[in-house]
Amino acid sequence: MASERPLKIAIVAGEESGDLLGADIVRALEKTTGRKIRLVGIGGRHLQELGLTPLFDGSEIALMGFSAVLRDLPRLMRRISQTAGTIAAERPDCLITIDSPDFSLRIAKRVRAAAPAIPIVHYVCPSVWAWRPGRAAAMKPYVDHILCILPFEVKALTRLGGPPGTYVGHRLTRDPGVLGAAKAQRLPRDLSEDRVKTLLVLPGSRRGEVRRLIEPFGKAISVLHQRGHRLRLMLPTVPHVADLVKTSVTRWDEKPEIITDPERKWLAFGKADAALIASGTVSLELALCGVPMVSSYKLDPIARQLLQHLVTTWSALLPNLIADRALVPEFYDQYVRPENLARQVEALFADTGMRAWQRAGFAEIARRMATDRPSGEIAAEVVLGCIRKANRE
Image (cartoon, rainbow, N blue to C red; front, side, top):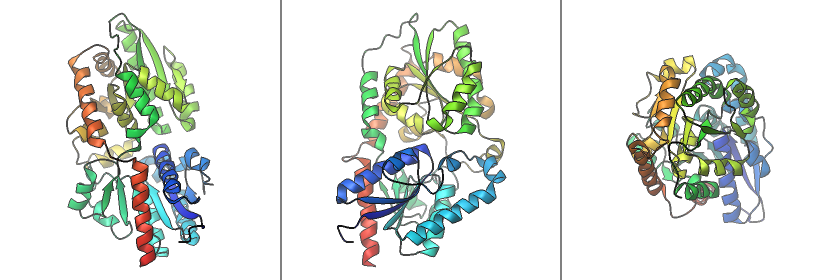
């Protein structure tokens, strides 16, 4: 590789969280190599700020649940074919696929078939330790390395016969916003009964999630009011669902402060007394910030029928899995009941054993996830190693 030539990286990131990880690794590659990075593929606003012109809007992937996939399968397959064909023709130095395995790994498989010399790295290990463990061995022919963001995943890949993995840590453990919110959460906090409590409400980053949870969350807040709690509601969200959120909360008894600015989001995390959330990456953000929470999720009907026979893990929530104990209560589908959610949140508004149990567990999670270098830097090192190996072969 000539040092003056830009490093060409193909990237596939549909989710908001994947877009952030992609931007993190691209910045680290640029810093490590001292070279400009030319991007091709799919990504959101963070990768676009670094020069990516996406082949299409990545939210098309992020918004798809099982039912939507079945309804729109022909278009989805065309997108997979389009993306794989473009990447294979571009002959990048490396393809990095990020999360969204049902979409991104299909692209990886096609690229490997069309252009076997392109090294392929997948960022965020598919949850083979939770369901469909056979996927680990199935990835090995077309994924050269997996960048793991959970401490136990490298051993799981080895046990299941998957590609080699490296624990890179998680970008959140060093994120300035997370660190600032965690510092604020460590300050003395007045939890007296008559104080106005700050409640974070996080109904998800996908349109389907928001539609299914916004009503029970609103009703839970009404129950809290009926039980005598005075609340300040803060609802951080992402741009592609912000309009839906704004429309949906008009039916709530009390309107939340809707936040789309990242800096204001972390300030809200620092102020929060508790959070009511949709199960997902945000649970780890909150845990690393030290915010006690109650989690819930409602699957679309087809996903519910499929997953109930395939899930093998004891919890769907990252903080619980990393700590290896039930820190955060989680409620799913028909058990997402506003009256119960309200009482669970209420238990976090005072200096209770439940609150102390969560916060002690969150501190243990931070210790387990610590790395000696930033995750982007470790990930970039793995990618460059795969590129060097491909060039030698």
